[in-house]
Image (cartoon, rainbow, N blue to C red; front, side, top):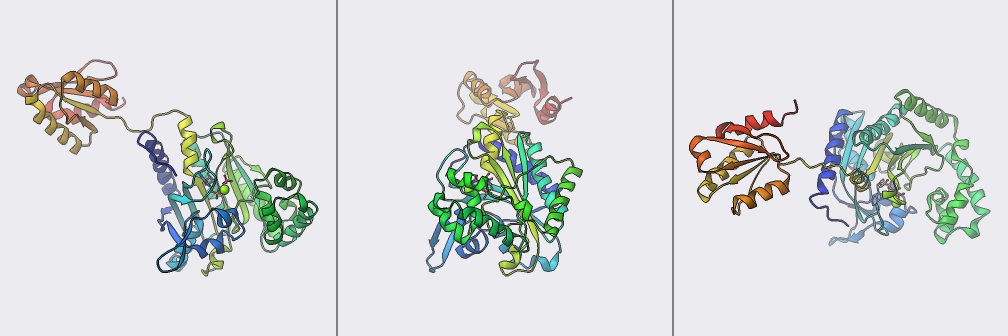
Length: 414
Ligand code: ATP
Ligand code: MG
């Protein structure tokens, strides 16, 4: 679990701000659910035999003897809230996004933490391929807005209740032929949830999985049609993608479309998937809600921020102005001026420790203030001062009662 310190937090805020603004443009409203849920919610949705539920959850008993878990993902809590508040009664199509910490007891590596952060979106009520493409488009546009161009969209279809059982039998047949070579976990998965073998991280299991039959050959006509339409619509909006039958996703609730956004940057090591999602038409009903189809995604903020930091760009807003007092007698006036200018909307620094003018100016330099303004006796008498540009250029004369306006004009890009 990480502390995110000033210096890094600006990158996070930039991503969060960009996402909130963009998702708003798509008509998605923010939902905030608790950090803790009944353990049963995740067992019933994510699935008992998945790594997330089987090995990675922070589960504990509270004082009332209930089994609770820190949320390992955001889709199930959002679906729970959607059901609990009967949202489908008041609107046929609901678009939500969320942002916050998730918890998984995993082995720590680059890009893999025990408290990490996801930004995700869910759309309830539309079974149409256009809805799948809309949520993928949101991710594509977010990555673009962040300047992350080296990320590829991989799509797949997992079929539905009509065609997946037949695929599962074909898969089991293939896996049985190699069962003695599978890892201990996959031996169990083979019996309980064979699709999960396909996303086992064990090398030998992956080799066996890569020789398995493709699910795309087993799709029924409606699923095939849905997947074809998703691709046609992706083409129509100009989104590039790769069809990848290995995209299974590590959760049980998906039907039909699944997708992952995979980055090819060495900074992420093996944690190269920045996000993924898909359609989950049966989840809401299976959790006791109405029969409402849905599709969504979750993006790993930690990994996005790692990639952005690699770019080396500065994200925090700079200080507009540093006000220095040339002598002790000017400190009160300078302090009051700083207060007033903040009220007027400027980002102003003032060194409350006082000290020599030289040390104050050094600090102005270190903070990267755009301008500095020195108040001394002469300035107090005349009501006039000089705005000194800290990165070179001529000083700008200014009246002390017009600093905000003058500075705005000076900063404004012409
Ligand atoms: P991976 O295959 O890398 O383990 P996952 O399939 O378990 O990922 P999802 O459940 O799909 O991950 O979560 C969506 C995104 O959340 C991931 O693509 C990743 O960016 C992020 N994520 C998941 N687990 C972690 C973690 N432990 N630390 C940091 N980010 C994570
Ligand atoms: Mg994982």
